[in-house]
Length: 97
Image (cartoon, rainbow, N blue to C red):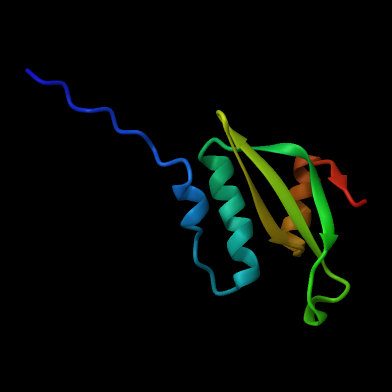
């Protein structure tokens, strides 16, 4: 009797298939939450930097370094009230330098 082959989860799938929302600003935030649910973790600090482009003047982008096993990646999330609430709840260190 043959044993079935092991099925390995595609670690990048959760990061590439972000939930679709009516607000594109929320898409990356929900992608971050999905990655955390899938076992990725945030490596502090999170970096807050100004967004590029004239239409985004004065707003921030947050850059999260994520790790899982030996894999590492980054996801950038636009500043929204929902994201700020998440950062406060999780007591995540922010580097604004």
